[in-house]
Length: 158
Ligand code: NI
Image 1: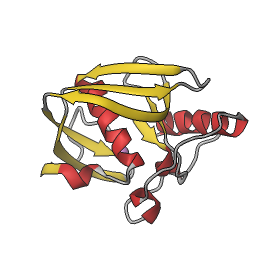
Image 2: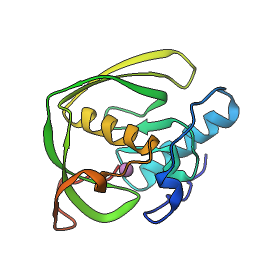
Image 3: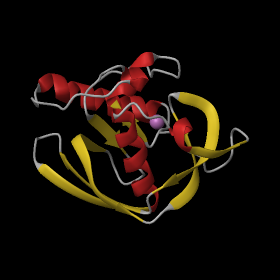
Image 4: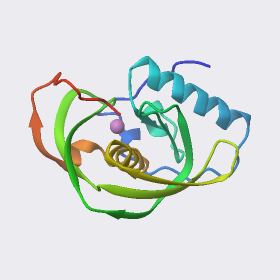
């Protein structure tokens, strides 16, 4: 496994739409393992492939319940709303309030290609929404309602 460089704001790859994964092979597993290691190295709770320069529909998440890899994630329903402070590993040091769904259901493939259905509320719903946005080239700053002072406690970058 290896830590990959996290692309930051200004890198145009972050604004591109990612392509679906068509083959789950050793190279993809390497990408997933590297993404998890990279996410942990910067204390993130989520990371999307374009953040390490790969335009594939892959995200990794760990909200404190162990790592989860989602391949070709697709939001199948969302409801309610929550407004919380969030940040992004690709926009370091900036924090802002963002409105996200309160509940979200995502279908995806796991790292072995098995179908998954994840129902998230609270923090998990927020991270699922944030990471799937990355795959469309959307950054949290596009949705910020209000910026707050940096280094606020309890803020986590994704
Ligand atoms: Ni992010």
